[in-house]
Image 1: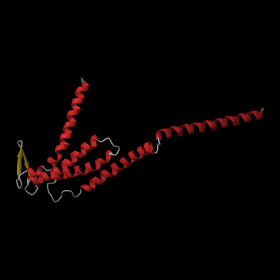
Image 2: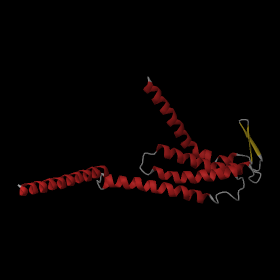
Image 3: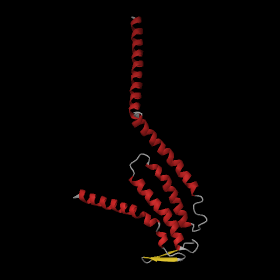
Image 4: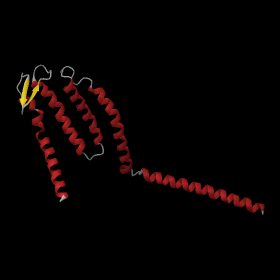
Amino acid sequence: MKDKTRIRKKFIIEGVIALFIAISPIIFYGYKYLPVGAKTWTFLGIEFTDNGFDDDVSLAFYYYLNKSVPLLLLIIWFVTSKNWWYHAILIPIAMYSFQLYTVLNYANSERIDENEILYVIAVTMVVVPIVYFIRLKLVDKHVHGIDLDAMDTELRILKEKEELRKEREKLEQQRKTALKKM
């Protein structure tokens, strides 16, 4: 019974995701269906204003949708990806996030997409080394056949053998000196 509810829940979630991906072009160009030149627009009892975008609510939605739709698609890609490099998707996610934040908070179309690159560079400086480290580990293990854990184990065994050899030589030396004294 638990498996059926889990499968049904997974099916519903995946269906919603697939539906969003399918209608994303319509959502992306949704600003074209808004009244041009209007200062406000009411939808389902919610009133949207121009938010300072040249007294035009369709221009405000142009910026909102051009930042939020790609951001949501990238988040879906990041969450559902099973590739080793999926952390690299965080860089465009960060870029669109900073841009959307700017659009929502600084409703001045002249300041949009200006300084977000500085924030993206900071995120990139963290994400790129992580992705490179993961890639390096995977290439060493799967392409070159280098297993670092196995190498560590072999090195530890060699160290132990070397210590035992030195101990044996030391005991042998002690035995020879003891035989000479007799």
